Image (cartoon, rainbow, N blue to C red; front, side, top):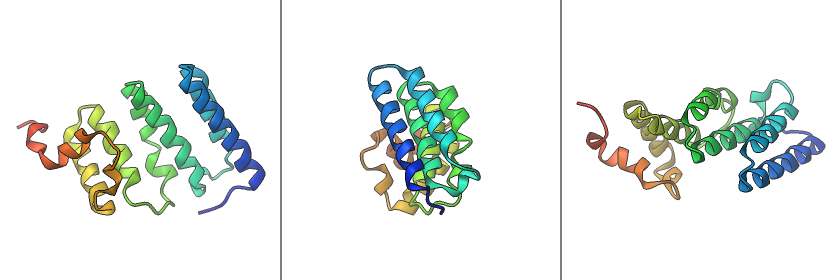
Length: 145
């Protein structure tokens, strides 16, 4: 995993903080513009830098918070591209599972949640909405027959 130059990392951190502040003030459009701006500062190939995944994750999580599933799903296509060089314990799969769950694609969500659970021994689900873990425990309540 490549490391960003300190100056670029500082700029990105500042912009992400600004995005967070805008989101907190319900200035969602400004927040998403800031996050896109932060992503643009990351050099190519972006997938070599872990910060690319982080920015994508923030964007997806913010869309999920707003219940804008269509945009969360659109951005979720980038999770594995920008996270391919990351070593993680199921974070990518949990994030994709959350998007699929909220899209009511429970079969696919279950697949991703199962991988996330296995990779992390359940740790990735700590602090998350219990409904995600419930899908693993009681999938029959969600899945179509």
